[in-house]
Image 1: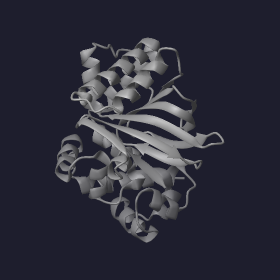
Image 2: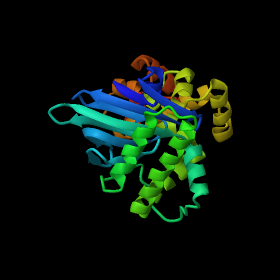
Image 3: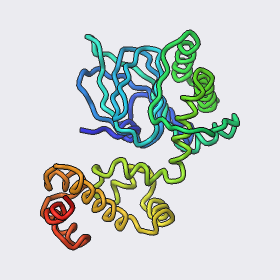
Length: 284
């Protein structure tokens, strides 16, 4: 099973969720499990480790995290996550935010994004300054204050500014990754999770927008409506896999979101004029 976050936490109503506005949501999570899980995030996230140990694996790297560490991920990241240690205990503060929050942060503090290289996953080890910042963040989450949302927003900015100072090139590479994908945020999320999409309702849920907003955004970006875009991307991805992989046609059908291999064959022939098997033979 693949968990979509923060969708999963918001829908299941975890014991503590603090949402300041539509720009970002804060979730406190405590897990007790040793199994490896698959995770995909639909918004950007900062994870503040407050207890236990965990390993996160992406396509690019593997990161071992301990108490006091901080990891930052861009939206659309696909991860394998595993709690370490005999006790199997892991505690973290999960801070989710969308493009608007990050772009406002960049503008507010006049951060120069010029340069090369992007990083979708970065992390910072625990340190004398970082530990009290994380402890302070958790303290404010547990208070009922009149201006709690604004305080939490400022605490988030405080930690981000500290990380910027700690390693500017690495942190800016993460901001740059967000900036470059910001214009096509919805497309970026949908492309990264194509195999989880069965219909337009799934698309809207993944992007966390209404069906009307989804339709409008896709029309502006691609000139296609939601169904046209989904059908087109499924066929493009399946054609790529047929040419460049040894996966079975049934497996390709499933990974591209088709209910059955026979239905995939019908749709593929309609789009490319030949069956998937013939297409593979012609392009090998």
